Picture 1 (cartoon, rainbow, N blue to C red):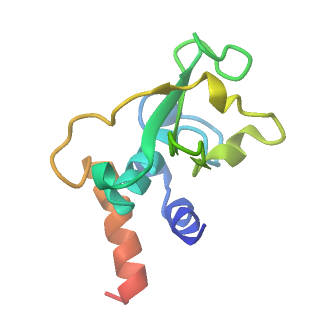
Picture 2: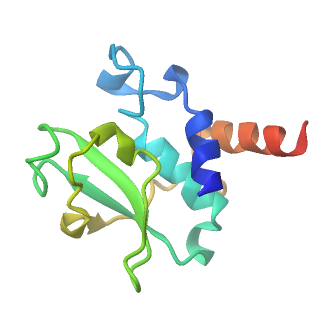
Length: 129
């Protein structure tokens, strides 16, 4: 999906938080929340058919360490998954069926500062601004 490719192109270390901020990894790890949040807003947020879902160590210890989560969007009607950072897990199967529906944090319209940075960069690239 082109919009997911655009989001991934605009992820950078400055968007990372917590333990991920100082991580040696230079990939998609640590970006799942902000990438999913940006995708959620770009697709129309509550007007979209996609909803935020989260996996946690509690629901998915085979994939995530204690304290870790993994965010993505899913259409609850047909179970179509949009996961902008799925590649961080390599060949491991992500057990999406164990995920729990969860809202994005209650930021003002348009999302968090970090999500807005991604959305703004995509808009600049798309329209050459």
